Length: 300
Image 1: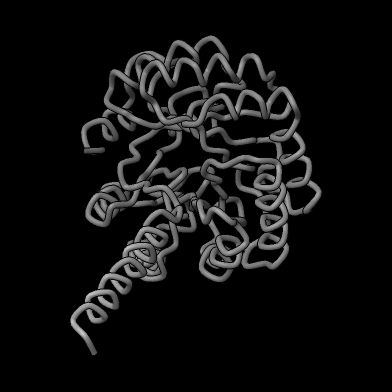
Image 2: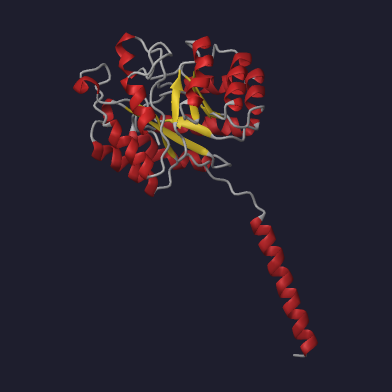
């Protein structure tokens, strides 16, 4: 082979290699957004409108970076926009959840939830706030069930087909506490998401009183690359003699999350009814309770 021919062959090879490299590296990489940085609170915006709106400033000043906004299908798009605007101004990540379907098991609930998210005025607000994450429905679904899987596959498909490109957040079934929905079916849902930007949440109360259960579940999520956050959790109040039977070792849970880069969001800023008042982080949206001080002192 002549030197000239050899040179042409080498140049052609390098050009092909360069084009191949450029083609590969410019393809969009679809994956769930990172969640390790999340330090948030649950905020009962739909039930305590003005107090919750004002509390956003206190939440940001306390060092939190995320707020899980409790919302319902009777919430107006314009007021949701107000909350999201303030979150943006305070650099708070908003995760909006629909509370209407808590504890439900009918697939029609999720269809109704997606109807709300895709309602023209609501969807316009969501699209105008790229920072927002949609938490489709709070604590919906049966435990360890293909009903949970299939309802959320359909929901994710509808949201993506409508043009929503942000993160989709999905609570586990069994009132948010079931491990098997997530361990068995999370990847079926992720694989149905063309963006693969679906994040799962577990809620930890009375079903999570053993530290070994916490470590085993979260460890499996890590090993299996399941994007997971703790969307709600409580603590060991009154030695478990409480309405949720919660003896969760919150100190252990928080430390495990920090050590393993898992975001967490305790329940809740304020406004719980009398039987759940032990979970208030502030008293009437004012001074910190023991629970509030514990979270603020330990979240970082």
